[in-house]
Length: 104
Image 1 (tube, rainbow, N blue to C red):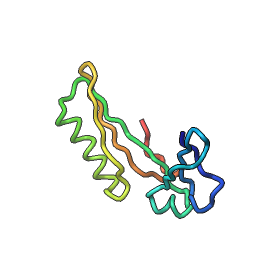
Image 2 (cartoon, rainbow, N blue to C red):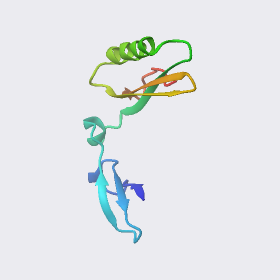
Image 3 (cartoon, rainbow, N blue to C red):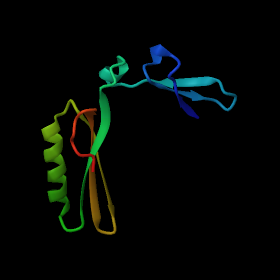
């Protein structure tokens, strides 16, 4: 079981894994320097590109163009899936809390 470790200021908002006996076994801390330093001005955001009519190269080009626009320092990853002819590409990125980039 993972629990947020808010009680430890050194953990900077990380998570701790607890065994069935309730003893901490592992700690995960955020890798993003802004979050790790306690400056929680960033959030994980995403933008979804979905289509049943566009071919994969066109759909992937749209996602790649958006990812290029936000920049490599903000990009987390790009994922894709297909279901019944519906292609979906999701761009995951770091955004400011005040950033109004759509997460759709």
